[in-house]
Image 1: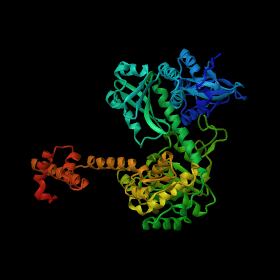
Image 2: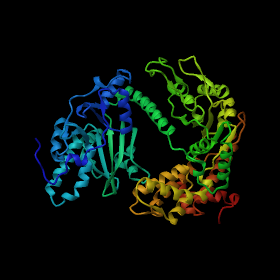
Image 3: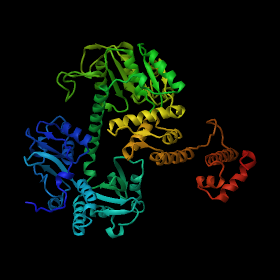
Length: 616
């Protein structure tokens, strides 16, 4: 029985209430799906009355993978029945002892009816500490106990935790992390994390570009580890960042992690395809533009919609190729469905079964009655092959046969299935160059290259930015239930100054990020200035880093010392010209940009002055 403590938060206030559950009828594949999409540490297993039977953990799933158990098998042999539980109305301070005694960082929460109502973990307790500490400032002793509880919870987990403040200095660290770094806590607290653990780059989490939670695999010192990074907010203000370091027993699970990665890719692909194939229709009129070239591409798309000819959509990532594809399908009035296949996401072993389907018994685990492939599903409709440049050569030949003969057989079957489909393919790659490099079939390229729609990047149609920014702002303010959020002229002017290498998708993400952070009903320039500034700096550095000598030579040509001197001088000259252009002729700034002293810069400048005609 827990002792009641007043002025202290309860479990119910801070537990994760949106909890996915497994059942005795669930399979290991079901567990993979839930672990991947919910990013949880454990999943409760319940009966038909929602009462707790046990839990499924990552370790149990790894055990199954190591034993090469079929993913269609039941989870029952891998359920952990000894589970630590707490009640909704238990106080977090009292739960501390329970977590400490069991050396765990999480517990299943049950209600008065003994039904599962949530999960409590270390993150919840840290959140409780941060949100309640201000309310307890008049009760200093309670605050000390709360901090002690937080540290105790951190020290009982097997993972390393490092917390930094808004200046990048280590504010808190648990014993596991100290052991990992082989340094005592008093030598770490207050030190810049960039100095103590430069590989971690935890200070990057404090930037405006970092959103959500990020999982990375990296090497720190002698250890291979997994790191989860996230921001820490207090009263909606960014106050720091946290890193969770998982490094113990990673080698033991190497095979299992690899197999799980493959399964997660399969699950993600199937989930994505199901959601996209049932998306709301998109009309060509919904593509907003004032740009002449873009209007011309819309007209071509509209005119070609009723044709049966294949369409090839070309353009950079984020320009709206899928929107054109959906718009063409809707305008075509074809009776069948619009079915999308992301060629870059299909696992190698799934290509044939995904495209052609399979018969019952075609392979182990095949569904009873078989399964139709994308060609069958798209019959009388449109099959959109996104990122066609990533399709393996072997599959390109089989696709070509279907395009030519309009028929195929399911995997494991003999029956010929005839289809009537319209193919729309899209890519951001240079297919002509890939054909020349024997990376893409020439015959397939000419089959697809019938009606070509080349979508211009956003930097070439900046007159569309005000129109797009206004529309995107309205969309997200409506989706988030924020009423009418507007975007100021100053903000639009700032957005129009950016080149948007990620095109409309980047613009959309930037506005969505700003709407999530704004505390008023107007998006202003200040809400974007930091992002634009950091992007421009990154682009300017990239433009200097990619500069390479433009040397033209025959493979058999003998290279003389004069040849090398000429090309070195030429490259130096081009670099100095670029630096001066970047800094508007400011020589001191140009020297700083190039990373050399003023005297070195002037020495090189004098060398090329008469030849280059630089600013006097």
